Image (tube, rainbow over all chains, first blue to last red; front, side):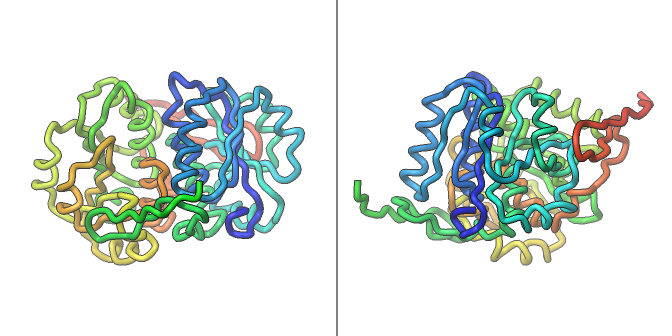
Length: 182
Length: 182
């Protein structure tokens, strides 16, 4: 992850539908950021308001996570220089593969399905990886994958240029508001 | 987790709103099940169709995860015998506390916030725990918490009485359909 001098990680979220997925995709991209991805690309329907809510989080909480829309996942994949990992419950178990995936220091495109994953994604991916063979959520699958990929290093990562910073409390909330430069 | 002869884990999801949260709560409860919780209680608005979609997953994929509605989180908490953990970005870092939480072999109620978490939750909880101090998702926070609590043991857990079972594949999908008794 670029945040940790580790390989750059980009998320490719397929088939976003604003009407159904707005909050799920937002949660997915926030989990991506929190667990060390440096950017996300999404396909499906262009959703400026979803992009804006991610931008606002980045402004407040720091780092330089970026989001962009593409209308063509094949183009994104074709242009990608580095490894491609597709998260799917049908793939190989993460616990048997993550060390090997980590070893290769290339930048990584992590593909996360939407409603229906096109067949060719399974072929394009260097790795089809399952986070359990059970149905749960692309949000949990991605977070577990990234957290295992970077060996928990993001759990206490401090994002640069944050306006807001939490001081952990046993009870209640303590948020530091830093002076903003912009 | 009951699945692993470990402490029983129940999720308490606060403030479910079917109009906004249907898919998020569904994903949350599926992540709860996949990572070893034995049941969930939710407050907010009663949502039979969300409950049905969880039931269907359990029927197909095995185990005995159950979901029920309550209109009073204070009652759930008062009646709870065991530890109470509240997941909140304002709490103590998971990486500093999880070993201590795991040591106590009591059953655990894991409280997961909705739109606005009532102040008294922070007081009722024995532990207010942060999975990073960054905004992301209750789905990712819960999955990371449970996966750390049970030390990754659910990653290859086989649910009993499953009708569907995946055989991990390098590419493509292989699902075994077992004969059903019902």
